[in-house]
Length: 336
Image 1 (tube, rainbow, N blue to C red):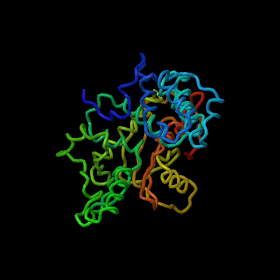
Image 2: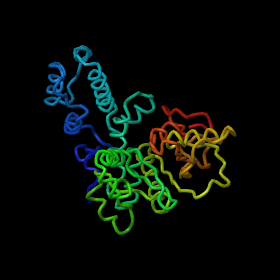
Image 3: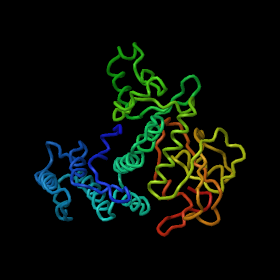
């Protein structure tokens, strides 16, 4: 079995009988070693002591007083977020259950923390997957994508990487003269697909979303695996080419722009932005689905606004689907 997304920390977790990930000391230690968490040289003694104590005992209880003793306000906030994440996962019993508790409870955490969890969950859900297009497309759920056109087709490149390339071009005019930047990144195709396994953590492959139907099918499969793994409901997700004869009894925006487009269409208002992806989700069984929606498709909308950056909100697939089980917060029909 080939490895991918090693940085997710999936190899540091343990699986229970249901295949759900248990939070381990090793995973918490990996989080404590992240540059966002390691105390900087100017950190106060209390913050350094807290970091060392958790390195020695990653699941140790941290009191409100310990956090209050941290001199820097930003440090207090960051540590508060990390400990809320850790304690929620531990209390829930698995990383998947913890993620559901966080998004259903509308808990406020920085994007970064939710991105960690989504990558972990997808890594677990896609374990054993050999389809590179599915894996690359799945990155869109936890890595913002920079959209650009190449020969009239929509391409998706990792936004953080593109920003780094652009910064390098601005500091080095020679790179600009030589044509450096996003245009120099490899576009995923059959010839270079084999290289994905060695570079999956570098996020250097461009997804030809508008040019290759295999890329759109890859995203459809990734969305289906995410929903099935988290919710235990078998679904089929199909990419659509056009929005003809689409009756959006229920829709979910995959990103803020997609949500705005869906709301505008539902309310009969002018659409702001562009609809760049449309998927049909069907539940294989009506079990666990609201009766008034059972048997009908749910449409998933992917939009693009003037920023040219697509940031998925995978939590919408938890809070926005027409689920009947206790604890799910279903929106009003037609909203997401």
